[in-house]
Image (cartoon, rainbow, N blue to C red; front, side, top):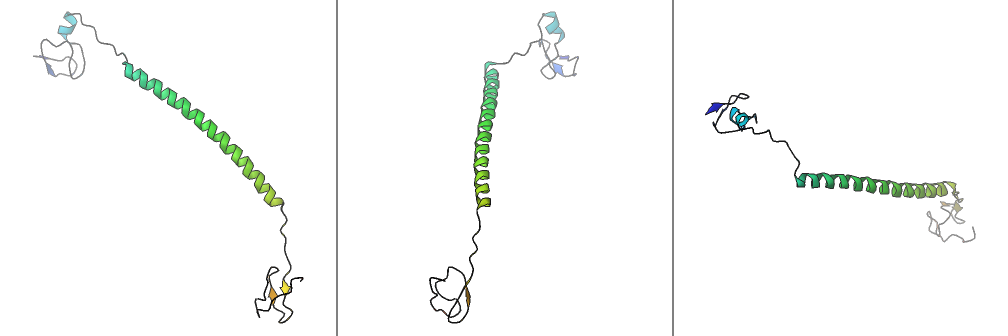
Length: 121
């Protein structure tokens, strides 16, 4: 057993790298073992491509949703303007010929005495 020059852990005399810190040992240097370089595996590239594609699709979906919402907002705004332009018809109250009670213009019967109101008033 030897001590790692990097972290001080005891490691096998035959180890080329420290399992704790990854430093190449003297045995690794004498054997000419190179420090491994990291290469991304196939699945990592596939995940990155999928995430990139998902981000693109999300952007397209958000743009489509924004366009749809703009169209709806324009339609609603148009309808609001139509409603604002409508005139509110205020009808004069109808007075009962029998008791003189004040009734809404669309009443068929007097709300005070119950007598049928004339239709031509």
